[in-house]
Length: 86
Image 1 (spheres, rainbow, N blue to C red):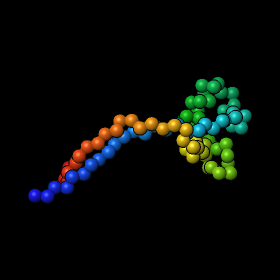
Image 2: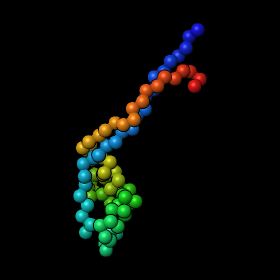
Image 3: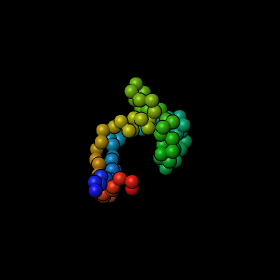
Image 4: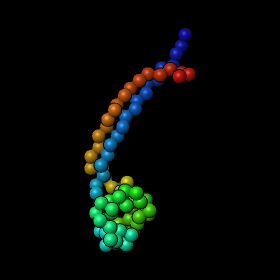
């Protein structure tokens, strides 16, 4: 009998990227908001907001995701074995 055996891996990766400084004066949609309201707005709308560097990025979400990684950590590492037909 021949059985194919596979190793699988799973894990969670957490990364922190370099920050981007947001000047609220450059974002009219943030005018009159408190700091907590600004943070909530950015959290909910960063892919619809203009980037701080409009020459290189189409939106703030893309710009944030392209920043260098400052720190990363791998959690929940697991290895298991599976066979064909599982």
